[in-house]
Length: 239
Image (cartoon, rainbow, N blue to C red; front, side, top):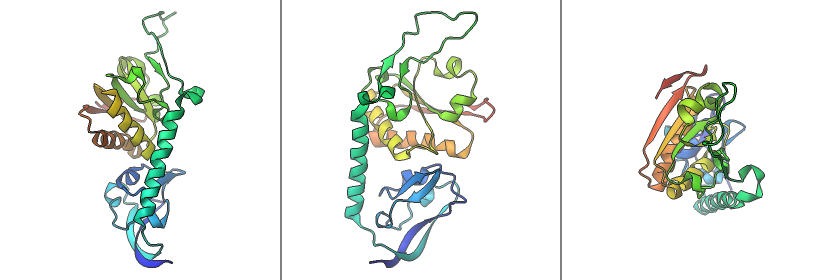
């Protein structure tokens, strides 16, 4: 039975899909679907509006309307299912060829005819495919790299990637909660020396830094985090 109560409302025209509201919602009531924030279900929204302060686009507000009552037990079940889903993804590792871990010896071989060598030392590189227990992550200087920055910056391997392990993702189109959970596990198990977050200057890309900060907080890690920002035309504008 529906009752009149406070509940979140999303302005899709303003929403840029950065996912910061998803991170700010402890009940898991919000998700990014097709590049926009969506309410998973009325039953999961407590109507308190904690997510509003995380939105850089002012796309969220609390309204009073007829809605299904908030259910704490349903929220607990939802959060538990999400944890199980993430655990299952981590456990499947070897079941997917794209997740099979391997390392590359960059001391072997040399550039031919002036070609530069890749500085990538391991595979996979997508954040959700990385096993937090992978040996190559242990004690490494890690790079959390946005997909767009990777494509735009021409000297990525020489200037940024060299000497670092790498994880790639998109805070706008990927599952933000899944990224936080995976990076939290990496912080907890890999004992990283440092984390460098590389994002593009566009607003939605800033969500990657937020993911890093939330994961560090959740893990209790002391790993230092720094940020590099690239422009859309492939220049470093902050480091």
